[in-house]
Image 1 (cartoon, rainbow, N blue to C red):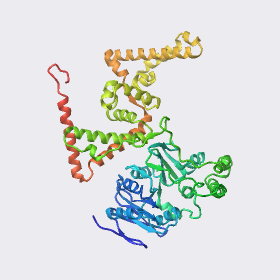
Image 2: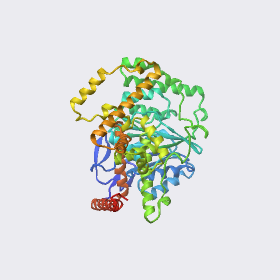
Image 3: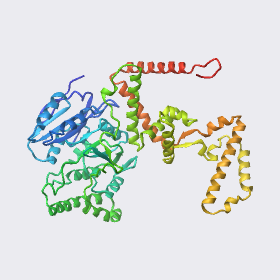
Image 4: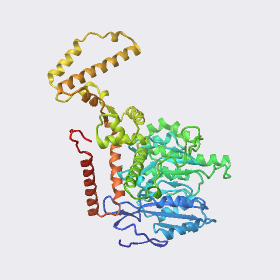
Length: 550
């Protein structure tokens, strides 16, 4: 790989992960962009560090194992008096993506500002030194930013309290939001950490630099929220990633516990409100602002919310470590056919778990939908149970949930219009319409309330059954074949976004399995896998002398 030397006004450093880049100048700053389509974009990950020796390694380790490997990690040592500085230097010696800056203690806002001055990435990501992220955090943020071509990605997070945690989020819309739509969501919970903090978001450095957005070093409260408000003013599109990717641990205490009086706190909040109020005047026109003015003023008495973690007996909280499927090298080491299958199954489960979180599904729901997406319609629950690797009882409950979510439908539940083939003869349609018009009034119609509805439902079911029997007779199908036809389980059009996610998931699995392969090696590998599958199908599809498959 060609070596590239990067120089700035403070120091010279080398990063081998920035080959094949071109420069785009704006406001005398430089952003590097990849020339090849589909190649990872550089992300600048900023971590202010102050006396964090107890938790720093967990934070940095979680960054260095990111799936998105093209990043620069800027560790800003803000005058630490413990071993934090030495720990940072150790990481810089081990990994040339790590950059360490030692400086005098000036506070977190100034420290972040100096890091922004040094950053060279296309995107900006923040972490606190006592928190950590999941291995796919940066990749998911970048994927969402580029897939939806938006200016900010905001994600769910885990609130950690001791050995328990709870998932926190707010926006449930699975689409790109305009500035006004995003502001409308924010006004409902103006003091929620989800909107106020930096660490659950991905920013474009170009927007930050074009408008010289920085932390206000004159305040010690809500400075990150003000940074976000200023960024939102200059951004136009937003996407909410509904996957918790960040573990937030609260250790800092409130302003009062830090020695700030209630009166000073309120005075600072009133000053911040002035900016908050101007922000909404800027986002909304005068008439619309008048309608939301009372909601804007609710910021004055709103209390900061980072989300409590319910104690063990209550729902909503979980034990730390049970919130997601994790893969460890020692678990999947080993030789032989069984271990080969186990490794692939664990990788598939891991990816399905991630797809489930993205779409607010349970792992079982994702598994069933994936089976339907891969194999098409199923004619029996038992067959679907075998393919999805779920016991029939669990599968039955899962199918009920998916039907309630309007993601699947059984052929039996289709209306006669849905079941009617497109090529049905006009005479048959006319006959059906005539029969409907001349039919005698049903006694059930005279019954009020629930009884009438029950009779109508029963009648409709009988009619569908008769229609299906007539069609089966006409087509020469047996009762057993008709039963299988009736029990078919189908995907609804509403499941399309989830199926699209499964497509991306399979591409990611290929990238994982073929990492380090050349194009020729990958093509050869895929061809070998196809031949192996063909051989297995051929062997398991043998027919016995009686003509039945074994």
